[in-house]
Length: 54
Image (tube, rainbow, N blue to C red; front, side):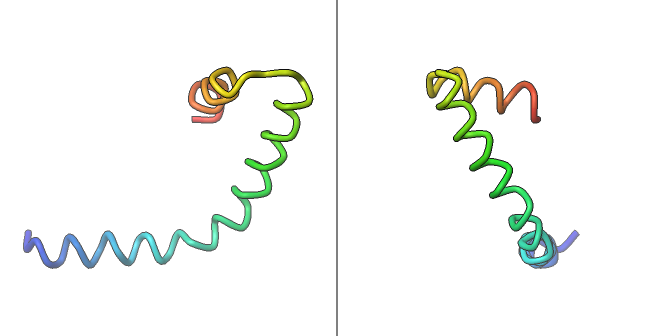
């Protein structure tokens, strides 16, 4: 496959995926607020995000 086509496809995918940020950002902020209120450390909150939400 032509490398220029692959790069263009990746860029198009990023552009097409941008509207999803409107849903992900509020969820991430909400999780961060709840994690702080629950007393989780930064490492614990990160690990929860990686293993639970991934």
